[in-house]
Image 1 (tube, rainbow, N blue to C red):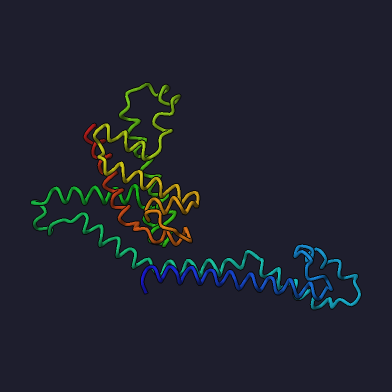
Image 2: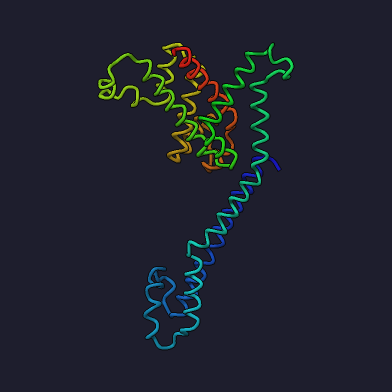
Length: 276
């Protein structure tokens, strides 16, 4: 089963579960209304409100009414979510190994190092691998955990927040201005990632590709955070018509974004080290 087919299957399973539960609830409410002799057009809330009064109504089978009402209360109990959420979590966990394997392979391809015996001839590669390792552990761990749990949307939002925070901190260090004036003007706090990246390009820390990456990630983040499917489509699917935002998020290549984010942070942090 392909990744796309797998995602469709998961969405269909959840949709079917919700549909069955909703149908079951409506059937019980209808049965209760019929039992109480209420008109079929009676609002559902009125059925529940009428039930306690039915104890004084002649001809109402109190035992049946009580049994249906008890079923209804069980179906709307939040305890029911325990099994449902556990099933979804187990489904996500079943994909962890596959996602981790894909992530590790692409990281090793992006940051290759020579055999340990030849390491002295590949200091540059070893240095890049070390930097990537530190960035993953100290900056991107939460985002990567969300990705491995099949939660692409939150993973992208977290990724964006890390880059934006570090860009703000770097510019705060670079801009020569009294801190009270910077605070009053909101510099650089009031700027967003794509604007911050453009400023860092002016300082020759980032380049045009980094600015474009920041713009794309910002658009994607805004679309996911505000459930705006058109923004998500414009960010990564060339404006293609999409039906479901969660399905759309699962179709975005998170790993490629994470790798570009590592390079983005390397540039900021290496410049920071050089400045000190």
